[in-house]
Every structure is written in C-alpha cells, then in structure tokens.
Length: 336
Image (cartoon, rainbow, N blue to C red; front, side, top):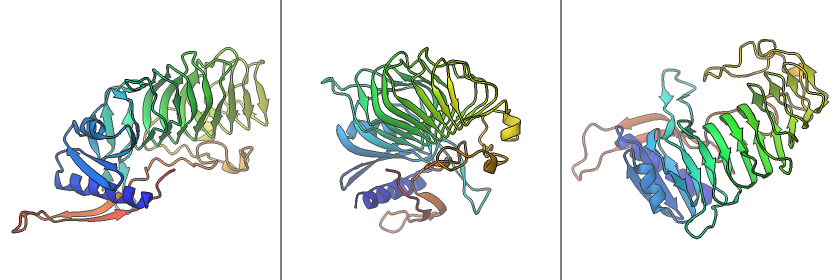
C-alpha cells in the first residue's frame, strides 16, 4: 500500500507538471493526503508543510530554490540528476531536477538530528552538501549528483549509491558504517582512523589523498591515479599505478590507464558509460565485474520515479473548467 500511494503521488506530480509546463512542481505526500505546490519555491513550500517525520516530497523536472536547512526526516525524489533520454524515442528527454544553492542537514530546534533521510534523482552541485549540527543516522543518497559532501558531525549507518560526486570530505569527523557503492567519485578523504568506511564498485577519478591512518576498505574499484593514503585495504581493485607501501592490496591489478580499461579518459561526461572494455578479465571478490556495473547495484542513473513516455494536454478546458491531461508512464521499482 505504501508503494502504491507513493506511485500515485508521483503520477500526480507528473500530471500537475504537465498542466503547468512553465512551472516546476512539488508534491507532498503524508499518509493518504497529497498537496501540490508550484513555482521555483515549490520545494520550500512542500518542505515547510511536511511533518517532522514521514513526509515524501516528489519534485518534477525543473529548477528549484533550495531549503537551506534540512531538519526533518523526509524522503525527496526528483526526475534524475541528468536529462534522461526515453529509450524508444532518442529525441524525447525527461529533463533533470536541479536544486540551486547548498544543502545542510541539521538538528531541529530541540537539538534532535533527523534520521533516515532519503534523497534520489537530484542534481545538487551548485554548492556544498553539508552534514552538520547533530549525529546523523540512516542517511540514504541514491542517483544524485553532488559537489562536495562535507561531513561536519558524526554520521552513522548511511550510504551513497549510484551517485556522481566530486568529493567526500570527512573533516576529521567519525563515520560509522558509511558505505559508498557504485559511485563515480573524484576522491574521498579526511576521515579519522576510528571510522568504518567501505567503498565498493566505485570509480575514483583523481588522486585519493586519504587520512593518515586510512580507515577505508576498498573493493572492486578503479583508481585513475596512484592512491596516496597510508593504510587501507584494497581488494580486487584496478589501479593506474602502485599502492603505497603502507597499504595492503589483495588480488589487485596495477599500472592500467583509463584508456586501457574504459577506452576513454576520466573526464566525467553524461554520455560516457564507464563500461569495462574487457569485464571478464577483471572479476571482483564478489564474482561480478570490477567497477560501476558489478555488485548488487549496477550503475544506472534513472531514478525510481515513474517516467512519462507519452503525454497529451487538450488545448481547451471542458465546460466545467477542467483541462484533460492524458499520460502514459513507465513504472519502475521504488528503491528501499
């Protein structure tokens, strides 16, 4: 029932956006109640109306003003962090959802940090994404584009999955059970040795600086440059260079350039697939291919929101003032 209500709310957001094509649309679902907001401040209005826990906000394609402080346990879905070409019509695209400005996850006025925030299908790369003011637990970020993710307080039992991220910076704050899975990342660093961080089936595009003690476990990843962190363990990773003597490599491949592995350089561009030229030669410790397409969450930028494959809006309203909108949508599974 929960998934059905979410799917219906997503379709309502798409329908509302189709009727107001010049305006971005935000739909707030709380239980069985749904509210719709329009315009560049629609996200702000939906967030202001959301309860402290349990609200679901669905954003249409378009550009939204940010909510500077996220202090509620909400789920926020967008249309994707890049334009999505509909498979059967290469000329038809679903524009992405962009949130302008920074993003801060903070404790509320009572000092309680929000838990179990879920973000999917959003482009938030104008400014920093900060986790600050309170120990954050259960943060889930899926299929988003982020600039700097700055951890400024303790983060627990959280993951980033299938994301495009420039950098994840720990700022000497502890991360407990932080998982980074099937992401394209420039680098990750500045977490203290007390942290527990696993990075699996990722691409690291630049030099990885790391923290002195190296609290990281890397598995099935590609490094486009020589890692320079002290410590850390690397399982079944492909490395364009050698590991420092303080790191441990297990079943790794060395001195292999991006051109040898992917047939391209490491500059991120939306049209690049990052598929291995020879996946059978590079098998991870889980039995799947090394890199973005292995593991339990192969690289896929399309979010779980329904995707309109056909729409028709009547040119005139009916005699009772209604405007008929016909939508044909492609359903996709909602990520847990």
